[in-house]
Length: 278
Image (cartoon, rainbow, N blue to C red; front, top):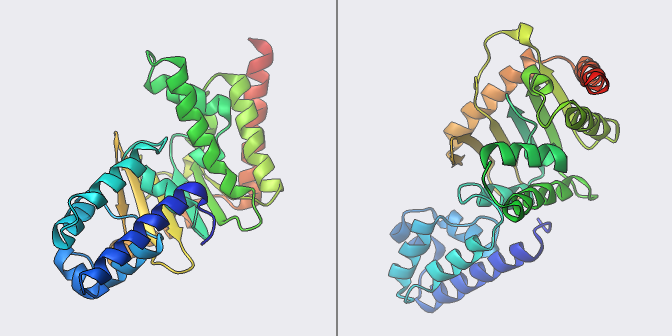
């Protein structure tokens, strides 16, 4: 898992410091884990920089190791450097080291596939009074995540979009035409496998809720769901298994990749015609 960049290096420093203080206290990973209410395996993942602890875990580590708050302060410093919402920063970190990502979106193009213009329209719609520099910072952070799809070690990326995503004219017909062309380019370049869940499919799992599944080379899989200004990163094996089952049902109800590509192309043409008549 070597795709984390400078921020990943910083979290590895957090892990090295944790290992150093734990060993100085004469505790095994399991012993520390029991005292901070996580498994010893998770302490090992923290020390390797693979997983990032939640704030309350960092605080309990400070208490157990009597470090004077160093882990909480380091955690806050790293989080404050993130261009993402507080509930999403860890998801962005995990994306960068995932070997496989499966996403479902019912209303918007996933962030990893958004163009700058589309992302700007989405951000501005949620923050109509925000200064331009704040909007651009958010857009830049979102677009920078897509770099993981460009390298030789890019993850397998499987996306299911509800047909609604293709029809809502986010940013207007020109922006939507460009956005759908962007999706098709990722398919043609084999950077993503995209399926569309058509209106005709009717009711479906996760109605109105996005879902992201991530797999890793040397860590358990996770699932992520999002609500209004909040997100849930789930790693309980039973819950992740249920999320994977829901995704399998979505995949079964979706159009084939070939039929999905044809529908995306048709929707792009519809937006293109709207652009030329307005």
